[in-house]
Length: 130
Image (tube, rainbow, N blue to C red; front, side):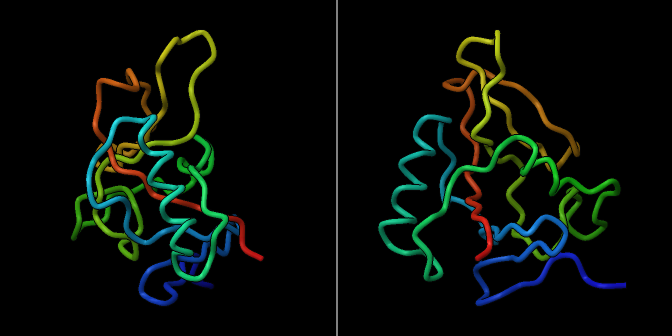
């Protein structure tokens, strides 16, 4: 069986299933949702891993990282090739839910909605592979 996630340059992960390239880790600090966009801009200004087209993942893209079974070593529902950030923001907000954004909780293995200025979560950047 072919491996889905491939680590490259110790900083990025290629997802063979979706064709996306992910940041292996995430922001070093937790942030409110709106400030996550500044983090993405910084990655692009620095050409993180040689690319300048990083972006916030959509809700569906981030949800694609949630595993159906917990990784026994990390206790998280994410492949162990990724670093152990428990919660990561998506770019998605929910229609009809004012000022609320979606995030992945890799500890519980699901997507949730929270007040975007209430929670401080990590940002894991994504890009489409060339």
